[in-house]
Length: 471
Ligand SMILES: [Zn+2]
View 1 (cartoon, rainbow, N blue to C red):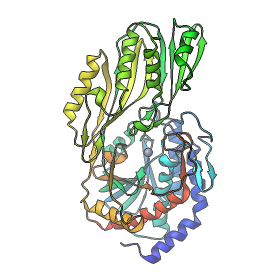
View 2 (cartoon, rainbow, N blue to C red):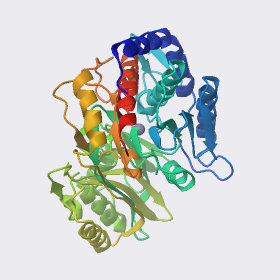
View 3 (cartoon, rainbow, N blue to C red):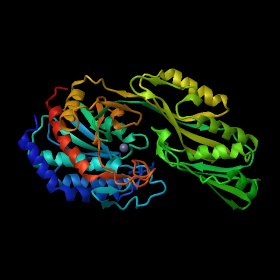
View 4 (tube, rainbow, N blue to C red):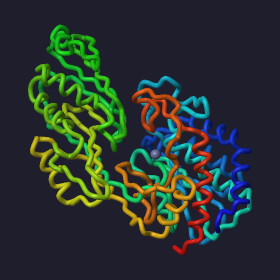
């Protein structure tokens, strides 16, 4: 059904009347620290994720929606009783808060029409938005042919096992969209490879090397500990370079590096703290033994972000150039372990890609562990659902809207038929302009409240168009 002028007026007044409630509900979810971890027992992604899911389902059921908890992997709220389903997929887990917050990550504050806190933008505002979209359908008595549901995931940021579990236990929706990017819509996502590059047992003066919290972030902090070097030697190496700080601990030099964090899909926007330390210790001969060779290989891998150092400099006309980032490093059992996060174009030759990566890594005396390849997502732009959603964007957002592609991985890649749609709107004002602050995975993440409320209105219009299609 088409959203009439009268209906849109009702939707607008409903949203206006529920603005404060929206803010409160979003605050409630943001204040629960829900970084997904793997835990044994009945809460597979930890207590925080279980708590935030319970809260979202409790709200949904309080608002009159049907709810279901999929053993704490994920949950959903649904409206209507059609046989075929259309799903909206948001996630409730967040990336770790990282460093450098000016505000409190888990004590959401509202300022000048924005809310600041970890998960405000990615992706808890979308979780409340999809919940409120269903509430509006219900409160305004809008009947749909399809059952419409709001999915609440708990493992989006670290492996999407929530979606795997859901699709093993529930039929796939005929169409799904995930408001985990920006309007208009993303019809192709690069493939994602994650892997650990692990050195042989090394000897030398390396005592420790640690950096990063998550595979999908360029780390803004890393630390290396070396024996057998003097304070003066390291001080001379550092000079006036403000990326580094030094202190001595039991005769060992502890060097810390500060970079700039960024999403792994856009590593050019960050400065990798692990790479900074590799450069410092190698250029100044601070590291010895086979540790030196291992660190040299890591430096080589991180010396570019577009696959060159791994012999895979691929590019295509749909999703563009390959990217890779080193998100984490650890030194355990005398072995260095570098985690790599790579986003490759949809048309890349996957066999060649894997072959060249393994050959490069093994050629340097490292092994590849925990190799995972999440294959690309691609829905042709002439698909009727894509056309319907693009029509909505052109009528209600910008007549010149064009669908896009990206390196970021969303739930869309797990769906048989799905895209990323919203919830970021173009030309949304910024709260502040402090480099490295305010982005989805960075410190002081924030969201514009009115932008999300506008997205809810677009979701209603879009769902009514999708509901008319024969899938
Ligand atoms: Zn997200």
